[in-house]
Length: 484
Image 1 (cartoon, rainbow, N blue to C red):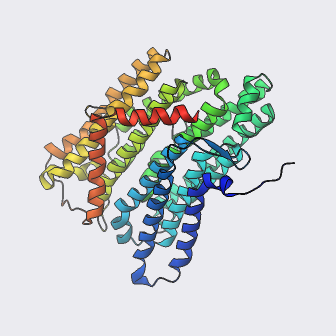
Image 2: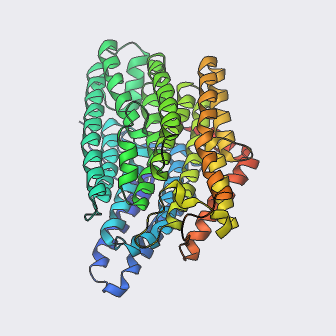
Image 3: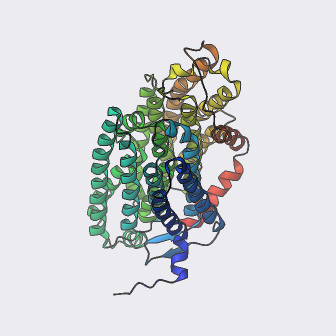
């Protein structure tokens, strides 16, 4: 048996994860010594930890692929790109949600450290090269998020959401673990490279591996929030505090995408003919369920939850194409979706105040009369989510549809376009409410300048990337080509 050896060269690829773990441990201890009026220092230490780790990861961008820890961990351009996006997304979430959390007494070391531990789990998932590493990262992220939803102990809605999330999450983790064990039985390995080698060279027990694939895809669909494994999303999005909803809805999608790519595109690429059929069903079901049910929603958080389901259907379109173009298109899509989600829930946070949750569509009535700029920000975000030019959402959908068309799924592209047209209705309804209806009540804004700047930056990014998408698409293509 080989003895594990640890040297600087072995540890260097995992430096961002180790640094973040050390920093969150320091924050946990340091908070014990802060007086009540110094609690804001914990928040700033958390932000510095996230941004500092993002800078550390960015410095390594472009370095060649390195597999370390005896094949369990990989550092490649894809993981570096997704880690930077994940860290900045969580940092932006905390900036947007600071006032909301302070007013409700939730900006505590417990909340912030759970956010950091969840982020650490995402980073591990993104760089996992082994089933055990994938599962450890997944559970670290999931357990942190269960606790974050349940932290609002005086809210029956949040408690119910946490219970549903925990129970359904445990079931999906069990499905995933069972599928992984069956793939191990069929291929004799837990390392993705060896699994791929075994299947490609006919050394695997194909029937057992195929049954394992079914369970793995079911587990992946739950983590992505794709129908018919979507039942947790509306209740959790609605029940959780809005900053928690944003932490669950934005950055984890980046990690779930990496999770899917590692398993399907790297480890099980030789079985693509089998998992593509499953993904076709997931894509159609997600786009249909998400876009049709969202029309009936009056609550904005529930509407955005069903919107998430439909967007995961479009994300799956690029993956099921099974080509580098499809994978890079999906990477572009998930990054664009993360920016749009940050902005959309950021608007809910902006309008929320003490004793008032601005989570109903009617709460946005007459927003243009109160602030033309933030009404324009919301308009840009809704246009992007619906896939209208000149926003990044248009090109995100265009790229995945082109990839699916090149792979021969013409009928599926037609269905996706029709469902996207249906989906445009509920996004444009919000625009109509903001610009054409009279205010239903008092509209106040979150006063912090940093939150306003971050929220404005999301709208600017949506427009800039929509006008100049080639640079980001080229970066995505290079990351996928160098990593797979």
